[in-house]
Length: 279
Image (cartoon, rainbow, N blue to C red; front, side):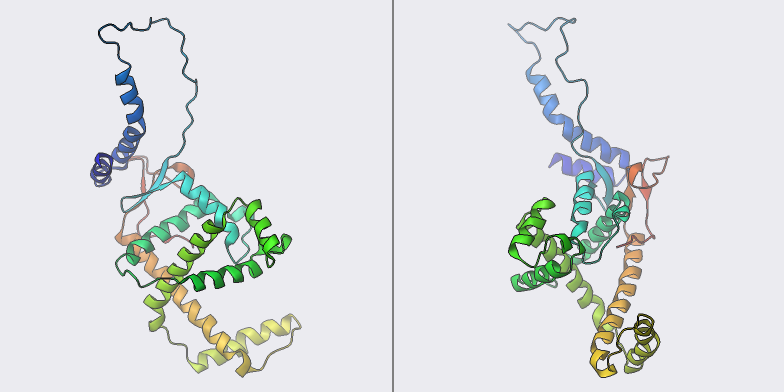
């Protein structure tokens, strides 16, 4: 509780004080141990020339790399985000799966989650929804091509190869579905796709693409519902991106580690308000 209050106090003033609180939290067990080992009555202090049995290098287990409205994002969170990128339905080149982009996604997710808690129950996801989404992922994840994930044996091999447990995947999928549902409910009602928009997309986008690829062109009534949904999702995405930019401007997003972005030299942090992060 003392660390929580200290962190709250520090976040309102400077990132350096937040880092000091975090460092104090890490050092408290060592300080307590040192107090217990102070020589008292009947105890003999170690000689000054006693050999040093402590390791020369202390490993840093974790560190805060960013703060979003007082919520810390750790380096281990970024590592996890990069590890789970393989579950994306779209194939992302390995070169694009960088710590910076992973942190961008975590920052956006933290901003979205702060809005979701204001409307509890709005994005509840059923077990059936999760099962259906996992089945779809097993059929579409590009990384599954080498494992035949449609079979249970292939799926288990895929999970083992990437160090996932089935529950980790379920939790990840549930979170993703909850965010998508929240976005759809928040912005979907405001999106209108006219019949003229659908026809224009069919004539000016879909048909030329299929002709260029020498593919068969389906009848308009057959693909019209799918085109309507594509246009609807495109417009929702545009609204979400603008909304996230506004959230960045309203909240405080600070990057504390130069490895994840530019850090202000004056106070050791960067406020990225007003600049959206890529999803």
